[in-house]
Amino acid sequence: MINEKTYVEIRGRKTFLLEGLERITEYGDTRIAVSCGEYTVAVNGEGMTLAFLADNRISVEGRIDSVEYIEKHRTQSR
Image 1: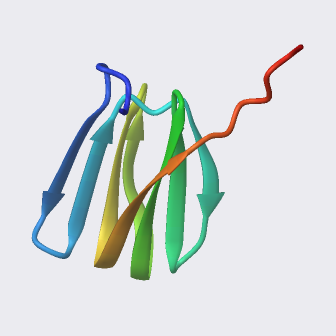
Image 2: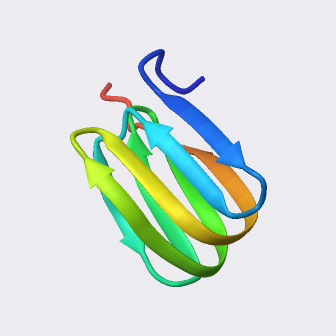
């Protein structure tokens, strides 16, 4: 589960909005990924651009092909 402070909205196939990001972990014209607590959220497509970034909010525009929620694996101390 993404933390309760994370909000995701997809508008058609052109706009992706996210609130609750900690940092951008990957940025390119085919993929933008952000860290959100225990997960990374990645937006994949073509012509991906960062349209807006402020505080913990981001807006990505381009042709969205997929959105991935990737769980971060934690190492457990013994």
